[in-house]
Image (cartoon, rainbow, N blue to C red; front, side, top):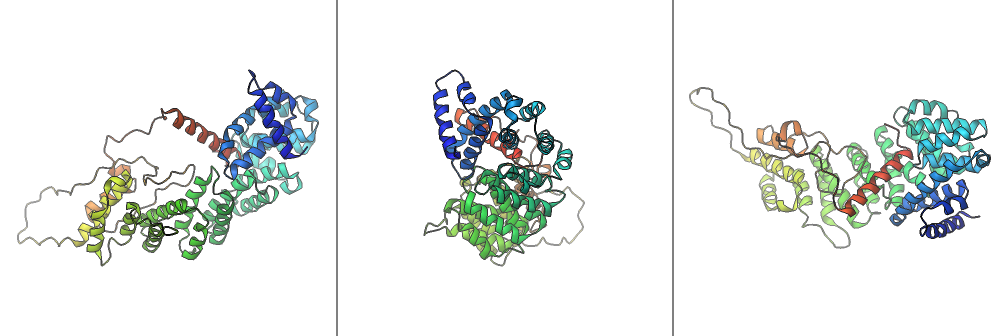
Amino acid sequence: MSRAAVTSRLIGLLLLAGGHPSTGFAQDALQPYQLVRSLQLIQDRIAVGDHAALPMQAKLLEMADARLRAADAEDYKDPKNFRALLVYGMSGGNPVTVEVATSRATTDPQSLVIAKGVIDYLTGRPGEAIEALRPIDPMALPPDLGAFLALVKGSLLAGDQPAAALRLLDEARLLGPGTLVEEAALRRSVGISVAQGDAARFALASTQYVERYLHSPYASQFADSFVSGVIALHMSISQDKLGDITSMMDSEREKVIYLRIARRAAIDGLNDLSAFASARAEQGRDGNTNQDDPRALLYASLSTVTSGTIEDVRAKLGKIDRSRLSEGDRALLDAAQAIAGEVVAPPAAVPEERPAPVAAEQPPVPEIATAQGADDSGLPPVEGAISDQPAVTAASNGPAAKAAVAAASGDVATAAPASAPSPAAEPTDPTDAAMTRTRRQLDLIDQMLGAAPK
């Protein structure tokens, strides 16, 4: 039976089971490997942007878990069913199910070694997992299992052996083209390339990801790594190459990416990059400019706040509508205005007589409470990626500038008042709560797919 036929049959069974108290009928009607194969197909659809398949993924995980737990030793004599158990574990499945099923299975010694490594990986023992899986060559395994194993091994070795990790991630992509495995492997390759300082590999992996998986539910994690990579590798990536990559995005995503790059570059003092990204964000596409976006105007002004045209910059800053900025960007605006004010302020007159010492009165500092590690730009959030809290170099040594820039960059130790708000509570709106639960499940599955256990 073809994979597409299995999926069609499964969907029919699920619809039939939906009218019954349980899904036992559908679970018993399919072999474990058929359920897991269908789970893979659903996840592959999700990877390319079919978010409507997310509820089906949750149902399939539940059904596969029950079927794999119920399978007996006779079921696992079929190599396809035992491989399915391992793939299920590496697809976001329950590690307890994998361990229980393995304990009753009779299979070949290599498969049992792989099972041990997978269980170690799923239960947070990366050192033991690496040792168990080290001699296993993913390329010598059936592609469905080899792809997942290469992804797991590559993720486990990313910190200590990045070059070996990249080779394994390439193998994962070769064995699982067009799948969630390839999406995860490409996304991890972007981050490892940044850590390696490999601009060419970073640009290639980013291009391939945008071409194939821009609409994945994990694309926000790619965006976070991409922005951080552009900042870290700005000396090695040309503006033309950056423009080639972003031109493959839709106009709204391209604008947000450039706004985020401009913001990070402005805070890090990368004036040329900030000016370029701000201009691209303002320019828009197909004649739809974003010149009325106050964020683009703010970030462009930050890159020239100490230039010879400071009066022009001050005038631009004064025209920005504060009500359309996030709290963090209002702090950046205050920082820019404070710096610009000190640049043009006349030097203090030298006193004729030495006065008695008095306590220095500091200029007022905007009070901004910013949660540590939060992205306070108001731009679309990203999950599970590099922190958007770069170091800040004040353009001026004035006290107002230092304090305001500290507030804008999230330095709560020096800028936040004692009454800083606590982290946001769980959403009370049912729709928001459901979206939050879905995102958490996606993050958990993504970690199982190859994020090294913490």
